[in-house]
Image 1 (cartoon, rainbow, N blue to C red):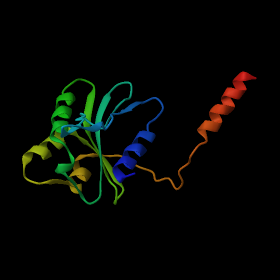
Image 2 (image 1 turned 90 degrees about the horizontal axis):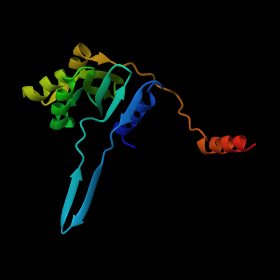
Image 3 (image 1 turned 120 degrees about the horizontal axis):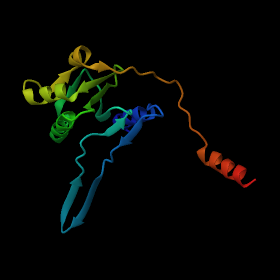
Length: 162
């Protein structure tokens, strides 16, 4: 599993029980009908979550280094998230994890829009995140667990039969 997918999974697994979380599918398909045909799903973002008050539309990015390349963000996402952010009780933005320095930030889509369209740089420097974005604390676990879910289900079924 690549670092980006691992970050997405860790983010999903960090959700409190009372927060609705949905990860959009990465639906890439291809088929051959005479010519090579490819279809790439163009989702607005990676995931949405709802905390009972706000709907969050979030694009998750994990990157090594001290800047986020603008090429890592698709233009349709910037435009769609910017449009969504105009609606009441919707918060749209990027969650950016700088994996090698273990820092994670929320960047509001309005700031990402400015960076994407200003044409001055090809990347957003870490200093911008540290100055203008919301840090998201992370806690590194020493050991990951795997649970015997299949055995648990069999035990529950057996208990229900008795």
